[in-house]
Image 1 (tube, each protein chain N blue to C red):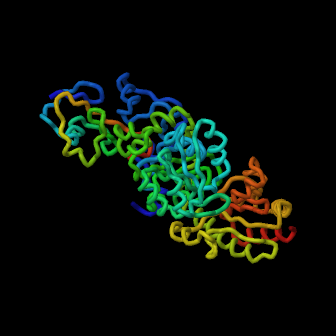
Image 2: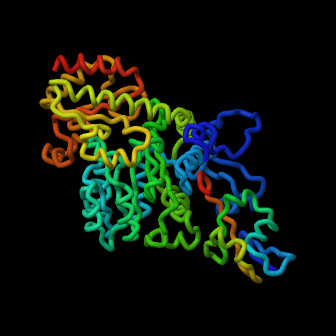
Image 3: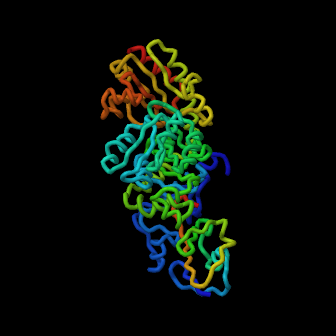
Length: 410
Length: 69
């Protein structure tokens, strides 16, 4: 395999375009035609290499999937309509009524809402633990546990768990380790190298590049024996190591219908080409800002895993090879001060979303986590004092000047 | 010998060919992308050369479309 940047530009193209275009065209077509009825039968049975219907597969989407597969080193990839669709598809495929998932107690607000508000009434139970303590994960796994779920860098707590240590436990206990790699997006962290089984990514973020389109990815690293999960076992007999993705493609993903549009796939292929450059630049900016912001008198504390005194710095240093990510959080005196800071920003934009090319600022407690009570938010590591920056790729000094002038008015 | 390949009876001139040989004999498109099922069970690539086929075996060549090898 070539380097990451080279593969981002050249990897994954299987078929030569009839016009010699260097870009994968947008195949904005719902259905695909066949020469013969038997060709159609074979395609529907998966016995012919052909697309039939774009809710199930599409040439532009396939090109994105193949590029991601090459970059991840996984056995296969499924592109879906959003990061939340990726998580939903994976959980629906692995678990069900009466089964359990072990998850980090720090989760993206919508992921927590999916588990607690959407899937709990369907009979799924989630055991929340501190995944920086692998012993807690080991203790929480029972015979009903179908997966362990953890974010590579939690948002907005910025906690980093030791994925290799967690994978040793999940491998021994026969459950897959699912990691949410949205904040690292393949370029900062290789989930396969640290033995995670499934990686879900919101490609809306770093991969789309400039927040152009919503999308999600499911990467199977090919490390888990799918005969160990009751729902994937029948598929393992038929499809071996591809069981999980075949089960998704032929049933769960097909039936749920959360497919990625060809146009969004095209935009995300474009974004992929500059992914490594943007990940490095935003990580460099974030580290520099973190070091400067923590010296400011109005700031109570700074949370960034690249800082040497961060509680998870050791795990971050071990796992995050090319930077510590774009997310940077800090605490001011309270919610009012946070709002004043946001209102004074001139270059940095007030918006939800992370890993845009532009630096974005948000007060998480009053927005992403607003459906939870103050005490629940405290337990989730989202106090009213917290401000989150998703650092972009602007010139560092411009960002710093904006932060300083905004802090001075607080 | 007679095999059922992708749901259709097929006469194969060779006796007891391996899965690998059948991929060649059937001129399977993009064999590097295919998953093989023999009588409904998955056959790993490592076993293509050693898995011998017998009369009336059912062999299916399956593709996982999209980023899967």
